[in-house]
Structure formats: structure tokens, C-alpha cells
Image 1 (cartoon, one colour):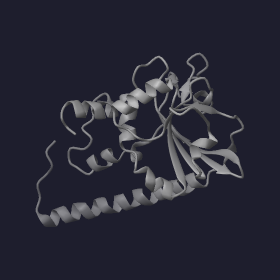
Image 2 (cartoon, one colour):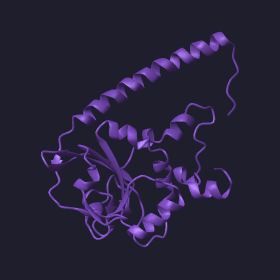
Image 3 (spheres, one colour):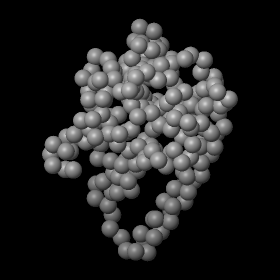
Length: 227
């Protein structure tokens, strides 16, 4: 629907009204951020191991000397040949990891697919973030990133999700022990900077049925000469 055309005075009135709502939204969001950072921690007692291109590492190794670790659960099942295109849009919006490292925070991507599949898919799309395989461990199941359809319980009258789920889990390393501080498997739009930019425009996100999966992979942009 075309936007209404008005004079500058009317535009300023409309903009000021929206600004008040934006401020309230920002204040509410900051309150949620404060509460998120104040969540209690729960200890991770399992000694998880992951496969990398260089060999096997532990969960503590993924911290790389930092005290905080953000894990992104990328949907890439063992039987799949490539990872989820929707998850590809999320990792395309990752920040410069050096900025996280400067704030004592590491980031790693974890999937159930074999490390050779991950390495091939990662290289094909020119990504350089740490990406490890949880193949052979219960990591995904224990943290809600993979749900067994046989044991999942319906919620709110809806069929439960099953299989791999996209999301984040945050860990804290303290006193030589690893703690889980936060997990999120929904309401992650604020982490997608591309959408935040598009939300400022009249056209918005221009989403179809597939949402973030509609964006081409880096390899597809490259093949089309859009490098």
C-alpha cells in the first residue's frame, strides 16, 4: 500500500509520535536485557567432546581462553548433504568475532553433521567462523537443539517440533567449571542485522513463505557474479 504523502509539518508530527513508541520499545528491551543477564546459572557436568578439522576438542576448549561462550546451533543433520539455508542467513549476520573476543567472549557453531560435511559446506560459502561437529555425543539433545519426535510433548495444542532446531546457548567458564546461562530457540530476529536495516524501509523485509531461507547462500551469490 503506497504511503500517504504529506507536508513536512505533518511528517514531523507523525515522526514524533512514532519516536515516543520507539523509546518505549527500547526501554522495554533494555529491561529484558538486564533480566537476561541476571538469570541464574546451571552447571554443565557432562564432558562433551566435538570433532574439528584438527581433531577432537572439549566444550571448555571452545572458550579459547575466554570466560564466555556463545554457541549457535546450526541445523545440519547427519543425513543431510548441506546445512539449513535459513541458518545460513543467521550466520551471515554474525558480528566481527574480534569484537566479541575483545569482550572476553568466544563464539562457535555446532551441528550434528560429520566434520567433513561441515568443512566442505563451510568452505563452499567462504565462512571462517569456528564450526564443530557434535556427532556421536548427546550435546544437541541435552540442550534442546535436536528433539526426538518419539518423546516430544505437544504444547499449547500444537504438534511439537522435531529434529534439529536453530538457536543459541550461552555458557560461562568460572572456577574451571562450565555453566549454562541462557538459551534461545525463538524470538531471535534482533540478531539479524539485515532485517533490522530492512525494517527501517517502507518495503520492510519483503518476506515470502520461506523467511530467512529465501536469501541466497554466499556460494550462490558468488556463482551469479555478485561478489
